[in-house]
Image 1 (cartoon, helix red, strand yellow):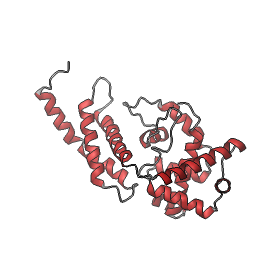
Image 2 (image 1 turned 45 degrees about the vertical axis):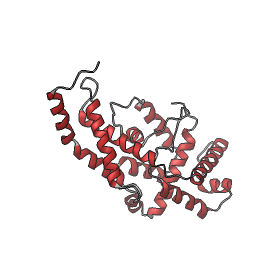
Image 3 (image 1 turned 90 degrees about the vertical axis):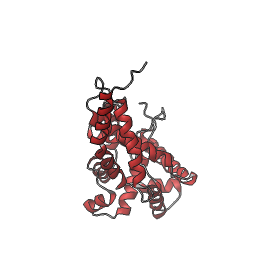
Image 4 (image 1 turned 120 degrees about the horizontal axis):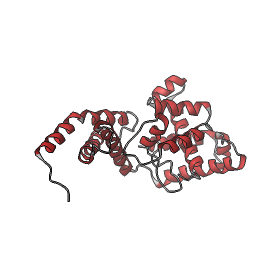
Length: 245
């Protein structure tokens, strides 16, 4: 039976929520600067606040490294859950993603090397401009990056939080996913991307630049970076499809 909260615990709870409230706004802002304008900032704040309260209520001093670290993890998770629930992809958009993914995987299974845009175009029977427009439209409809894109055979999503953990080596104490295995899988898979694609991944997920800022670094338009980013996600989806994690 759970022990009733003491006055001391209640005071600690209230103090902790107030002390770490700034994390909600900080994390929500980092999400908002990458999301379509249709996603309201207040919705991210609301979801993040619930994540913070949940973190404080579930924090276990004997299991978790620090409340701040645990709160950051729970806030990110709560915001990602809220974004998932929005589900902005239409059936036709999902079909396009599926078609591109299948084409990419088929080409790479047959030739044993990365599929080029032109090869994918040929498989889809579309011209390069049409293919790039497809990538732009897919990216424009997205509210999540890697989340809901990449899944293992067990149908477990790699969330953006987990993906960045694999890239940056962060340790989320509440995450039971084998981070070291994820890092190895991602490192091997990312090495198959082109140098430009690897740069986009690094700048977006490690340095956390916006697509516009990446375009400025690489001297490309924001639209072109959107296309490259979306193509990377689909390629990763295709290449991780057969991996058992």
